Length: 98
Length: 464
Image 1 (cartoon, rainbow over the protein chains, first blue to last red):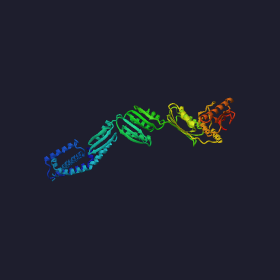
Image 2 (cartoon, each protein chain N blue to C red):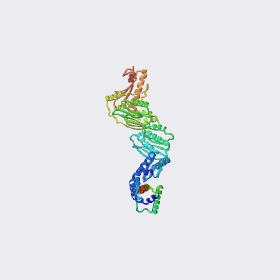
Image 3 (spheres, chains in turn blue, purple):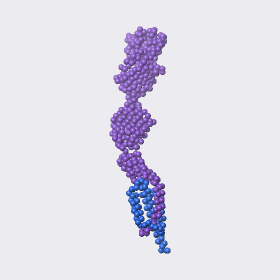
Image 4 (cartoon, rainbow over the protein chains, first blue to last red):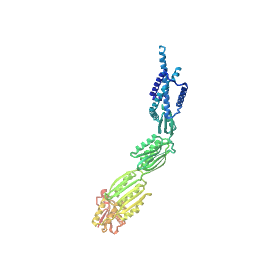
């Protein structure tokens, strides 16, 4: 894990920033969201992929790509969460003044 | 927290560029990651002794192929690769080097090269053996046909290095270690090589023993060549020691009265028993030849050349074998030199005088028995006499002034008669010779000195 992070830190940082930007936008976005049912399915899919990665079920290069994808996705999610929370905090500080 | 769930439903559009990132990252990083892991794995194995090591990386999975020399070594190598950071899985394709039973190693020398074969216990010892072979053999080609195997006896390297040193002493042959048994065969390069190898074998490492030592010594050769043109006698080859050397050189000087002796003999061990007793009579026979070669090889004596007359050839063919020690073989290839043209009495006298000026007919002290060292000279006198069929020849015996006159007179007569008998036995007519004794009445030098006395003790040939 530590090796993957040090080897791909540039890409992980890019994912984090991408997530941050997406999270920043998501708070004020008015378009359609993912339905609860779909997000449940997506969560199950991601959990299955994580399980496959931890169990080292996928061999060779695909296994490595899976690990890389999951780590990048995790960074993206973390970025999203930080971005959304920060945007929300910024908005709530401005709201009483308005 | 509730807000986070609400917002998260709108995070999905970002996954599209994320997937693009992911694809690019996978595309560009797979090869560098694999080579990085391969380099780290190889570095982790640097101090491990393995053969045929191969590392193949797919993604983060390492396929590790190698031959290990022990189960412990195999496991520790595997653990080293597994411990490399970043490696996800190790596909274990290691195995143990096959065990050789019996563990056989060999070094074989032929005309052009030395071949190392059989099994070596470790790559390091294999390299060590090859280097030692190259170092001890100088420019000789060394071919490596060694495999790596387990099951070497303890202290194998020491034993093999010791034996490898001996291969330089062989002309051809093979040295084999089978478990802890050492066998040797072949031919030593030089005389004494066999003995030197046998001595070294005593210091083999503990646990090793010699099963068979069949190293042969090269033939012990002594050669003598009588060259009538250069008037030389060339001695080459080996003699057992300096005493025999001196005795042979002295004998050659006496037997070859007119030839210059070129002495190229070397002292060496390994002479067959009775060497001196065989070479002395053989040299005597050579001295009776006009031109000839004597080759003594181990216990075989070969004499070839031209005798000066028929009877001498017959005598040597038949009689010489009896002079040798038992178990020696004698081969004679003796022809007869064509007789030279007859000459008149004056020339005849000149030829006799020339011969007797170069050498003297010797007798046993105080007796009338001809010294065998003088046979060469006598044969030359016979050859000359054969060229003078018309001449009457007086054989005159003289002594020094020591002792009683009567005894000296009788001794001189007997000695002259002994020489005449020899000439008759050689096939000359008895009527041609008169044997006369003069005692000490006709000295040619003073009888006061030993040198003068030696000159006075003589046989003269006078053509009448």
